[in-house]
Structure formats: structure tokens, C-alpha cells
Length: 293
Length: 157
Image (tube, rainbow over all chains, first blue to last red; front, side):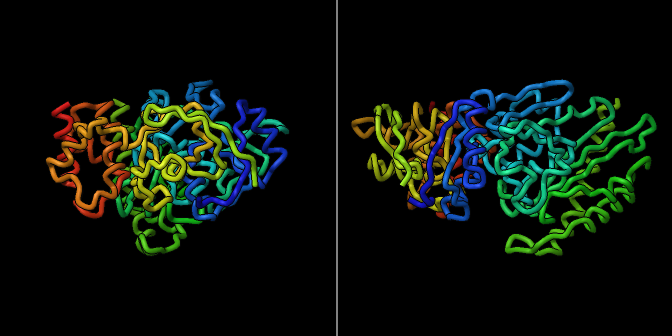
């Protein structure tokens, strides 16, 4: 028996879960898929005294389309996101990122919202959420608010969620149907492991083939997932060619502030940031051109 | 110490109505409380897949789930694969015939991940097998014969 003792609560409704969170606050952790949290509990890096299992709250398992956005509930499995037409067609960059998260047996339990709330700086889904301009729907007994992905990730494994708040869903605007393409590319030591660097790119072209809008986000190269804003600005209104994409990659690498470890040195991760940004942009742009045809 | 939790869980077709400490992992519940030691404790942090069992038919890392979460669930472990007379399951037979194991430590997890794959995709390509079993580590075989075994089992089913 490896985890430290805790009390186990299995609420049947969101309100019940929020009441537990309001009572236990920072002593408590919500449990969704558990593929990250239980690992930390087994090594006692996390020792919550109360575990609030939200898996029995049926309404949180839903994936739906609402008002031009895809909504992914807190216990919708990553595998469900992978196979959902709403996610695949609505937010292709998120679907492409989900397919690269860990392994099939992990994705069958792991949740998309849980991965975002866990805020691992190396993980794919936070970067995909940033690139897709998504937001986190947070609820507490005090009410509900939405937190833009740009404001959500505050540091390694830390987010803007208050201790009494539950991330009940992600809301991601549906990617424009025309002249827009996206890509998620990553490099990891072994298939299924957390990437040393991952890049999500969403690019919209105008009628002349110039970049109308680009959003680029990276994971694995900073203390939190980041936008490559200088690279985005450099692309604006420009006709993309090899030289421009090379320059955008260099700008993304200069936004990176990687920490080296046994999987990859800081210099190597910075190199990956440049190369993978260029590749993600090239793929996103060619997909945008296809959707223009 | 926090209160124990009562769960009604079916394991390999047998119903159990038991009390568990909240922090008891599914893996430890199977091994220590039910004496089902087929699910192996490898890394105990979700990396190796040696503890893979089926929960409601889905391959699941038993080290990353608490027994307290299992109320109403159906769990399948490697012990249920062979017949009561010891007749091997087709997937087990394919592993023996194709040299799909050496030390055997990873084998229970491999078998259950393979069974889950074959349930959804009875005739997988080698690439499907590699993807489905990618979360299960083997330090002996180099995987080639494991993939061959699962493809062979598919041909037989």
C-alpha cells in the first residue's frame, strides 16, 4: 500500500462535489482518470487527505457542440475525445494532440480536462488548448467562471484554479472551416512518453494565401506551456515560404526557456522548438491550403 | 484512519462484497485481498503496464486505480483466461507457440491488452498490435514475437 491515507468521497452530482471542495479546500484533490494524480500519490509526491472521485458524475462525461464551441466534460476520457466527431472535426489540433498522449490503455481512463488541470509543462493537451484558444470552465460553490487558456497555466503543475474550484469542462471554439489548418507535432524519446518538445499550430490564410491569423503553442520547453507570440506576429499578413517559417521557428526557440534533464538538454530542447515549430507551421499551412481548394 | 469503503465488485465472474481501505490500489486489492497474483507489481506508477487488467472490458493499469472506485465494476484478470481444466486461451496458446514470452513478468499485462484489442479488432495488423501494446514494457523479447503472437491469435479467433 503506497499512497498516504486519505478519505474517499464519491459524489453523484457536481453540486455535491463542490460542497466537498468548499469544505476541504486545499486538503482535497478531485480524482478524474487518475493517470497522473495516482502516480504522484503512489510516490507520495501528492498526499491529499481527501480524494473527491468525480467519475460517478454522469453529466461530466459528455462531449458536445454548443454555440460554436466544443465542450469536453471533466470525466470525458481522452479516448472518447480521440473518437468523437465533434472533437475530430471541430478542433482538429486538439484531436491530433490527444492521439499523441501516452498509450491507448492510459487514454482509456485518462481525461482531457484532468490533463489540462494537472498543468504538466511537458504535456500535449495544455499546449493544444492554448493554440486552439480554448478556455477552462471552473465552478465552485461561489459560482462559475471561465478562464482563458492564456491565463490558466501559471507555472509547473500550477493553474489559476482556486482550491475550491473544479474544472468542469473545456470549451474550445470550433476551428474555422475555410482556409484554416492545424497541426500538432512532438518529439519524445520513446513512443507514448511525454515529449521533449511539442508544438501546436493553427493557421488561417486569407484569400491571397497570406497569413490572416496564426496561433502557436509549445510544451516541454518552459516552466509552463507557452505561446510563441513573436513568431505569430512575424507571420501576420505574410506569404509563408521556407525562409519565413525558418524565422518563425527561430523566434519560437527564443521564447523557450527549457530546463535540461536526462531526456534532453536545454540546448537540444531549444533546437527542437525551432525545428518542430517550422514543421508544425508547414503542415498547418498545407492543410489550410487544402481546405481552400 | 479514514473509514473503509464497501464495494460490490465482480472479479473473473465471482461477486465480492468487501470492505477496502480507500488507499488500497486495485492492484494490491487483487494480489493481497483476493490472492490473485497474476497482475504483476512492476513500476507501480503507470509506466510499465505489467499490472494491466480489464475493468469493464477496458485495459486498465491496476496500480493507478483505487479499489474503492470499483463499486459495480467487473474486473478480468489473467487468471480467468485459461479454462478450469488448464486449457490455454487462444491468445495464451499463441504466445507459447510463437515464443511471445521469456521471463513472463510482463505477460499477464500483454495478454489482457491483447485480448482487449482482439475483442474490438479480431484481425489486427502488426501496426495495430504495436499501438495497442505500446503501454506494456517487455525487457526480454524485443517485442517481435509478442506482436507475432497476437497476430497469430487473431488469425485463429
